[in-house]
Every structure is written in structure tokens, then in C-alpha cells.
Image 1 (spheres, rainbow, N blue to C red):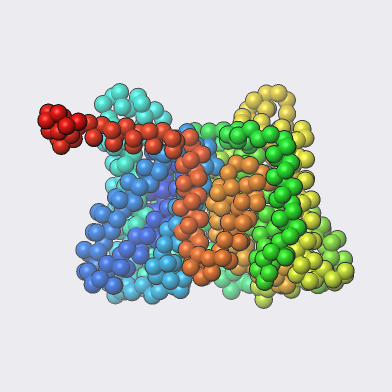
Image 2 (image 1 turned 180 degrees about the vertical axis):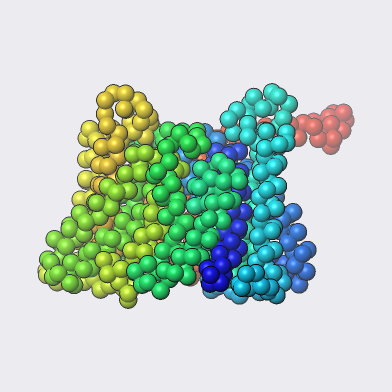
Length: 633
């Protein structure tokens, strides 16, 4: 009984932080319609700011905390609100890309400033303990629970009983009507984002002493608040806080009683994502808040008309350059082979995101399964190389079909959340199993042993041939009936269903094809390096791939090529500097691409406004007026 109580105490302390972070997340979602995937990154930002002020600058911890809550959090909230306003009218995929870009940018900036290694975060709250029912309770644990409960209860009261709370509930539904009623909707949303950022900052500061100062770990630990938000159906603030407590206690109990079982050792840390995935699948869609999904623009909608002869000439020139790469790049040839391999992965992701409007945040898991299957088939079963590569791609199709199951019920942000949770579950529970990377975490994967294809140059041409076949497959699908159905699915699934076409079958097909291509890319990636580990296919990679794909625009083959070059080739030429800044650069560029896709940013119009403003200032200049009176102008 004493042991059980000890686990409950630990779970309540951690769960209260999850609930605190979750309530801030739900608040911003309810008032803006944008699910902030960067909520955990804001928590990490708060923890780093507190560490900078308290440990490095010597401020007393109460003063450092106040600066973080009253200055850092509001400024971050204002920036996020401005981003959310810029995304008004954008598709859900663009909104997801934007917040993922913020997450990557914050993580990248923290890594540049503090390094990639985790730092010790000294406790700042009292650490004395006292007994409760035979268990020892830390004063810091009690303070964390009290602060989290008081803050969450106060927010719930504000949201339900005050005029400001009523305005926050109304602003996402009809901001224009709220404006007519005499309340500025922009001010309301700024307050909501500032409060949400304050809750994230508070959760990051409270949880950092127990896990250390690590940007990635802090981000993903606070992301466990997604499970709490799911229990609250992404709408109930008290339900979200209670869900955080339940998730924390359940995870602590699982750690205590299941942590010694090797096959289940990843379950405690994955429990919030199990909850997230199950709630999303089991809850009717009408129970979730409506996010105001905007259809994804058709691929090529904004493309300029290019004459056929110019397209053919450009394609021939590009093909010639690709054929001459081994003679042009010298020792950097493996870098370009890597880009060719990743062009297949980005092509499979573009098929989902750019063509059909489906968002997948577990795409790295597709590639991981293809890589490990290929390794097992070549080194274990001894299958011929090309056959093993094809079977590796086919082996991923069932996983793609399984991911398509939530896609038949969910869309937009909820589908992204479901796939993100599934990706984390696979990494923590399936990656260590013998089916994938095993206990060693690394598998050998050979290159072909015939016709000298193990040579770097010949392997480049082999990868290029596979990439060309993948591109031909995607282009053929785009021009076939399935491609037209996918475009219609992105534009309006309801209209497609009215015409008697099964949207479920269409989604299953596109996820299956996408998974096949990702599996092939994973197999080639494993063979290129000679071995493969799960580090290359973490859930963060899925987020990074989505952000990088946004750099290539909304096409298919062109977007995949641009994304692959940006992801694999540019860092190689930037050496250490660009590699260090890569997440920051990709994150900021993804944010810019998402904002640009909303159509609210027009360079020509912005330049015209600047020119008009400069002309007005010149005309209003007192010097010009005096010269005019003197007859000199």
C-alpha cells in the first residue's frame, strides 16, 4: 500500500504539470482554431529563459519566474497570435506546418545557444519531505500540485464566468460579430495566446528540475499534455486538467509495476499517446471542436503556364545534370545519393500532403519499417537484393492501411495528432523489438553484390533509377482517375461522397501507395550507409520532413526534389555551421512558406504600401514644406 501511494504521489506531481500545459493548449485551440504543436517548445523556451536568468545571471528564482511569466510568456503569446492571424484562411496542413516550424525553430535556437547536450537544472523549490500514509511527499511536489491546480481552476472560472471568458468562447466562431458587439477580437485572442503561453512556460519551469535542461526532451515531455487534452475532448478545461492527473498517475503506476517487463518497458512513457490515439479513434468526430478546415489548394493552382517545349527542355537538362552528377561532385557523391533516396521519401509524403490533403506525422516510421525489413530480408533471410527492396516496400503497406483507418474518421489536426501519437508509440514500443531494430538498435544492410553495384557511382545510378520509377508512378497516379479523386478529396470530401465515390477507399489507397514508397526509401537509405538505426527515424524526423516539404511548394516531383536537396545537400556544403543551424533555418522557412500559402502575404502589395507610405512621408516633410514656401521645390 505504501508503494502504491508513493507511485500515486509521483504521478500526481507529473500529471498536474501535464494538466497545466494541457489547459493552456486547449485555451488557445478553442480561441483560435489552431492546434499549437509548438506548445511544448514554448514550455522549453520558458525553462531555458528561467535557467538563463536564475542560474547564469544570478536573479532570485521568484524574480526570474515573474520575468518569464510576465514578459517572456506574453511576448511569445503575441508572436504566436500574430502568426495565427496570418494563417487565417490557410489550410489545416499549412497551419500544422507553421506550428511545427515554430517548434523546430525554438529547438534549433536552444541548441545553438546552449548546445545539444542536456544540462543539469538545479531544483529551486524546497526539497524537504514529510510523511503521508507511510509515503514520503516532497514539498516541491506539493507546491507543483497546488500551483497547477490553482492556475487551472482560475482559468476555468475566468473562462466560464467572466465577460472576457465569454468573448474568448465567441471569438473563434465569429470574430466579426464580436467586433460589432463592441469587443476587439484581436485583443481577446492576444490575451488568450498570452495566457496559453504563460501556462506552457509555467509547466516547463516546473518540470525542468526533474528531467534536466534538454530542448528535445522538454518539448516531447510536455507534448504528453496532448493526451490530457484528448481526455478533455480538446474543449473542456477542467476535463483536460483531470485528464492530466489521470495520465500522470497511470504512467507512474505503469512504471512501477510494468517497468521491469522488457517487452513493456516503453509503455509508461508512451501511455499519454496511447490515450491520445484511443480517444481520437473512439470518440465521435462531432464531439470534437470544429477547426474550420480550409480545403487544400489544387496542386499547381498558382503555377505559371510554361510552354510544353520549355518543360521538355528543362526536364531533359535536369536529367542530363543528374546523369553527370558523379563526374561533377567528386567525393560528395554519397551526399547526392542520399538526396536521391530522400527524394523518394519526400515524394511519398507529397502524395499525401500536397495531392490528397492528408497530413501524416508518422512518415519516418514508414521508412523505419522499410529499412528494418530490408535489413532482415538481406542479412537474415538471404533474399536477392532487388527482391528484398520490393518486399520491404510491400511490408510497409499494411502499416499504411492501418494509419488510413483513423484517416477515414478524422481529418486535419485530429488526423495529424493521431499519426503523431502512433509514430511515438512505434518508436518507443516497436523499434526496440526483434521485428525492427532489436536490442542492439542497429542493423546491417548490404549494397547489391552483383554487377559492381556496391560501388558508390553505380549505386548512385541504381538509386536514381529507383527514384525515376517512383516519380513515374506518382505522375501516373496523378494523371489517372485515382489522382483526380485525390485532388477532389483535398478540395471537398463531402462533394466526393455525394457523387457516390467512397472516400474511405480512396484514403486507404493513397496511404498504401505512400507507405510503399516510404518503405522503399527506407531500404535504400539503409543500404547506402551499410547499417541503420532508429535514431534516423525518430518522431522529430517526421515533423522535420513535413516542414522541409513545405519549402518545395505544393507540387509533387518538383517539391520532392527541392525538399531533398534542401534536406540532404545544402547542409553538406554548409559544413558544421549550417548543420548546427539546420533545424532553426528549416523551422523559420517552414513558417514563412505556411504563411505565404495562406494568400495573406503579397510581396507586390507590401512593396506598394511601403512606397505609398514613403511618398506620404515625403509630402508631409516639414523641410519639403519650407522649401516649397521658398519656391525651391
